[in-house]
Image 1 (cartoon, one colour):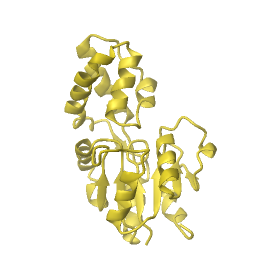
Image 2 (tube, helix red, strand yellow):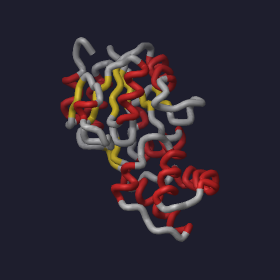
Image 3 (tube, helix red, strand yellow):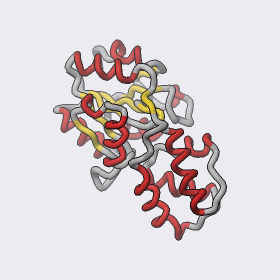
Image 4 (tube, rainbow, N blue to C red):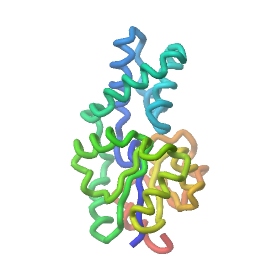
Length: 213
């Protein structure tokens, strides 16, 4: 059966509220005004270092503070779980795909340890045969290497399920079909992202995975 690799934040789980709360905890400790929810949500997708850089820029914090604030963000990152939840239908869709024999994996820009932390918190980790985080290799998405590695671990190339411009570029560079979840964190119009399939309800996903995919 076709291997399927998923992005995580904005695709399988809605973690924006945890990012918002976690970032604002750091900013409060530093004496800065909080981010709005929309600001925090828009910063997700390119990994922790980029999130922190955008957070700093939004509050006028100097570049020289990046290493220290990034380290503090990573130190707290494992705890960004209590406000996070799977999108409706995700667990059922993953269970149905796995029961049909599809090997399932994750390729995310979230670092590996916080990825495991949130998956364990949500009792989702046993659904996946392989997990590549943003620091599993020296490069991360949109470099296609982590996605290629995830497919290799699953035994062959298949399709990638994501929600963002980063995911679209990764799929394009990897030469694999993108199934775009339209309810995530993208900023561009869904029709402009070159997806093979666009869907907005995970309950429908298992029935969309059919030949030629």
